Length: 257
Image (cartoon, rainbow, N blue to C red):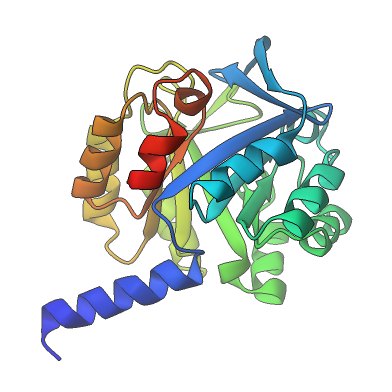
């Protein structure tokens, strides 16, 4: 096997391990309903569908394999709230689901895992309580987690994007890769929900610095052209939300992709 074939085989294995599928549609939940925020602002909430399960079934029907499910009530309160939505989607579709929002305790983590999540999405906790998260990695295995790195000017932001830390994005990624994390998505918070295009330069820097990372781009996707460009950069996946709900990208186009 030559080097190129070896890299392709390794990439295929990583794709299988992390649920396959370049396209990862997002469903954000408030009070059991499918909504979207702009730049994380709850005051800029828009309701898109009363039943997230129906939305998830549309994604599955288009041939998509993964789902990024976010409990916005949980994120705001610091405790998982919408696990019943997760359970319904997990039991009635075959989507590979990552679930985040409010994961702060072992009890909530167990609820999320037991409710059918393939991966627990961890964000602020990895910053605020490294000891706890590291313990979870040791207990459950790093492959059970999707690490979220929200950033502004390449610094980590936490608490619903309200607090900008002095933690360097690349140091953060490097630290947790050292602990076994291989699947990570990064959101440039200045782009999220704006439909003005992703931070391509940021994606390029992350991909070039961390070849072994299963990197998922997030935030700002507005067109199919954005998807092709992110794929060409070397991203292993891309999370899409508002562009779908606002009709910028159709389910049909995603199924063809």
